[in-house]
Image (cartoon, rainbow, N blue to C red):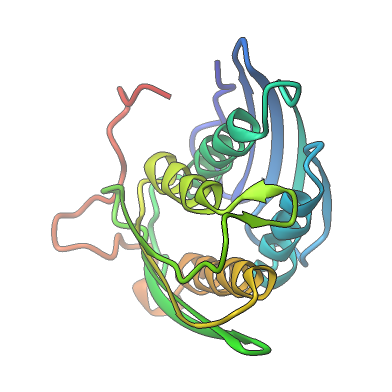
Length: 213
C-alpha cells in the first residue's frame, strides 16, 4: 500500500510507504534539496549507491527499508526501486515546467557510464552493462538493472543506461548511479521559459491513475 501525496504539491516533496509481506519501505523525498540523505536498507552496498542518488542529484532523501534479507536482498532492492520511483512521480506532480529530458556521462576511474532519461509518463528501461563477474559489493549485479527497471516503471520515465567502458564492478555501478542521479537532477529542473506549461505536444505527462502500485 502506498500513501498518497497531496494534490497540487508545489513543494516537490513526497512521502511514500510501501508495505508488503516481503518488505516495509518508507521514503521521504525533496527534489529541490541539497543532497542530504538518511538511508538504511540493511544492504550496505545498496545504501552506498542510494546515497549517490541523493548527493549527485541534489535530492534530500530518507529511506528506511526492512525486508526478508534472510531470503536474499532481491525483494528489498526491487521494492525500494518501486517506492523511490513512486516518490519521484508524486513529487513531480503534473510535471509542468520541467526540463523533462537529460543525458549525462560520468566516469569513475576506468569506467564510463551514460544515462539518458525522459520523464515522459511512459515507463521503459533499456540497460546495457559490462559486468565482470556476478557480484558487486554484497549484491548480485542483476539487481542493479532490476532496481532501475523498477524505478522506471513507477516514476513513468523512459530510461536508458549504458556502461561504455570498465573493468571493476564497483566502479561501473557507482558510475551508473552517479550518471542516473545527474540525469534525474537535470531533467526534473524547472525551466522558467516554460512558464508552468507541460513540455509535451500532447498537453500532459501524467501517468495513468490506475497503475497497480
